[in-house]
Length: 592
Image 1 (cartoon, helix red, strand yellow):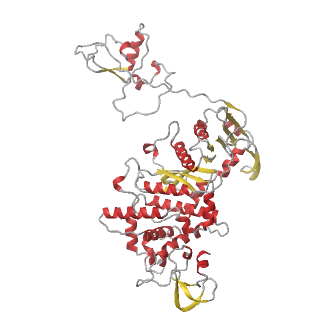
Image 2 (spheres, rainbow, N blue to C red; image 1 turned 90 degrees about the horizontal axis):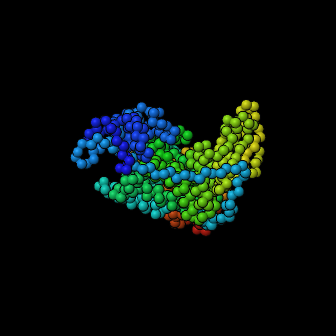
């Protein structure tokens, strides 16, 4: 206790050395001191066995409890006493003062009223010149994929892999062409997989894969894959669990954002990268198809294009923003990345893991619209109808309130269950009828649906669509390093993004995701194929590598063959495609 208000416990025979008294004795002594009117705090020493029955939970409301009603473990806790430093015996017991608690900032109480929201955001009028430029270029699937794994990224991986091999006294001499061949095999493993990856090179007729065997030797692939590296080990950040792949994450995020379609609606959520090793960053997520692995925060367009991602490291390595939890802080980071392209009225959708009235308020100040389901304890005491009462009402019933100061609406809607939805941009009107399945009558019924619920259900599924695309043909080859599965996830995400751009830019000649991935894999493998080595097959498989615009030359041939385009006789052919083609047909054949 402060020196101005020391309490003396008389008749206790306390010596000048450091002693401890029980809290119950001190409280009784303080009650006997009628002349002392000052109230000071008492420091209660922790129990001697801190590893025993010790918890972080509060014992109850401090203001409502009296000393006699405190738990026994608290009443019998030790209170520190010290000598005066004079060297003389002293019967005075000095209670150790606790550190002054900072006064909690009293938050202003929100005023909720029953009316619809009146948002003040501008309408979406932005155009996307970058997509128009991509449409004019008529890029092939390989060209679209190399928007993300561009020349700079490929050369960076080659340099870091060679550096790591040199540090291990191995002269790897990896080239960019070989790295693309390795990427091709990883992509191919998504739709053609074997129990063991070495079966690609076996000579058995049931497993031998000519495209892979002609592209690269087995031992060379194993050597490159074992030394694949993405960062300098001498410059790793000890506070980052993903420091080994951090340079790749930064590069991919930059490329994803650079070529992302400029849209109004975006989704934010969690994705899972499958991993079963001993790395500490893995998490168990019961609500996802992939339950065990790395959790990745993802921001996508409503169609599933990945704009921004960040692997989760928990609060130990990622400090959340003040007044927000970790999920809300990740939403703010995603919004900051979006606003690097311009301060536009984006509309973000997310689920109850992230939503809070405080987050809606912050996003509104940033000029960003947001809508999401919300847990009841995050509504800041919005006085809506009790869920039990709402369940007794007919399906489609709802209640809503708006915060007067910041125009944030919270709506509670009765569907198959009671859901809470919060928004700073969309209101109740217009209320529409929607068809819902009734489990009781086994029929579909018409129920009322507020506007913000309808828009949320339409636009929130971007992350789920991306997960669905990745899961169909994800990379199956894994290495011994903990980040090999994460690299497969990045490759799959880049292919998904390239395919999304293909759907936007090539509306007349679209291919599905499987054909898109096959195209990229075949081009990379054929480009590195060696058809002249002894023991290799000279007849190459027919693929669509003719569109990659790399290494195609017209040469003379002695024997006349039919042109692959116009089917008339010709004495010229493409050196790479090994197809007869006229000089006048050469360009059209390689771009059609």
